[in-house]
Amino acid sequence: MFQWRIWQADAWGELGLALAHPLYIAAGQIFHLLPEGWFCAGVNFFSGLGTAVAAATLAGIVATLTGRRWTGLAAAGMLAVAHTVWWLSTIAEVYTWSIAGLTIELWLLVSLIERRRGRHLVLLAMVNGLGLCVHNFALLPLPVYVAVGIGLVARRHLPGRWFAAAGGAWLVGASPYLTMIVLTATEPGGSAAAAISSALFGHGYADNVAGAGGSWRLIRANAALAAMNFASLLLPLAIIGWVHFRRRLGAPLAAALGAITVIEILFVVRYPVPDQFTFLLPSLVMIALAAGVGLAVLADASRRWRRAAIAAAVLSILLPPAVYAAAPPLLRGAGVRVSRSRQLPRDEMRYWLIPWKYNEHSAERFARSALRRAAPDGVILPESTSDHPLLLVQDRDDLSPGVVIQFRGHPLPDCRREPGSFRAAVGDRPLYVVSPAPGYAPTWVAKGAPGVRHEAAEPLWRVFWVQPSRRDDGR
Image 1 (cartoon, rainbow, N blue to C red):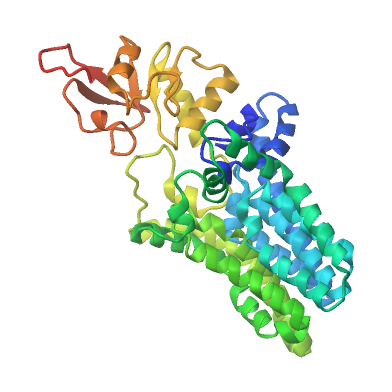
Image 2: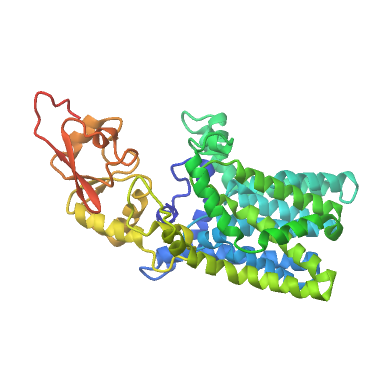
């Protein structure tokens, strides 16, 4: 989806303002400058670059807090090899740049509390405002920043004008996103309430953001993937750090960092979406920061504990990749299988458990094969996991240009709301779906309604229309 939106320079998207991420889409335009054939790889690389920025900044924060450079490097290394961080660093996603912004904010927060300089508050507000244009994650620590600013002004550590300047800086940084909200509210038929709802929740995600819904199957899958992040001593080291936060960092900084940690963890724990584990990144940043402090605590205890801390750091960086590589064969040997309602052309166990995506081209292989199958003038009814690969490969490579990919009710009439009109528009052209399973095809196809029969034809299913009869209701 993000590759397609960057390819199209689509700053709005179709899922509501909360999922627009305009600054991420704008920054991705640079990858149009790459040589032909490298665009998608460049967008994927962009995610890894965000992680690199986050890890480097985290190293600086921890080194500053502990006075030890090696603890900063260790914290950065442990964060970088955490499963979800590594996994999202290899695909086109926005989350890695949200933690890049978060780590910059944390460094400015540390500087603000320790040095009490107004420019740090202004820069912190500016970066957080820009972060809102990347992802709504930026809103989670914002109350803590505001509380710190108010506290510094109330205790006369900063003049009130700096707090006002910070408010202005935040508005400037967030102005692209705020402008989109205003435009949405003032468009024909729009309203302020609808625009704010779109900005906070997107289209149809309010229950998820509020923590309602979810299923036991999704909880189990996300818990298993989340647990992969702790195939090391990252969490025990973080607990040591948290226990000594106040003594090592001082009460104000410990309270601020502790509050942000609690907010980030609570948000993801009660966020029941299918890809819940991907929202762990900010929490993992806070855990890695605490683990860096924990390493310093151990190193200061004695020479023996210092050697133990270094060994724990090295083990926590080297062990996770070995665990990831060994997990798929071990689970297969134990009889564990990953099942989906629709069979995808990839090794599901490898895809989800191994964070590096070397030689993972299943989406592109599917799209090429499907477009060739539907050529020269077929119509494909995709769903949300297959529509963007089909659109991108067709447009990027000018492959099977005569094939129609029906995307969100266009270019043909909406096949779910107006099946009769859609059928008439298709005419004699061959019609394909990616699967007849419920949720992947219109009900009148999935249920085999009168007038339709389907046959498997990898990678697509062909829909065959019988000759009209007295029973034919036009659908």
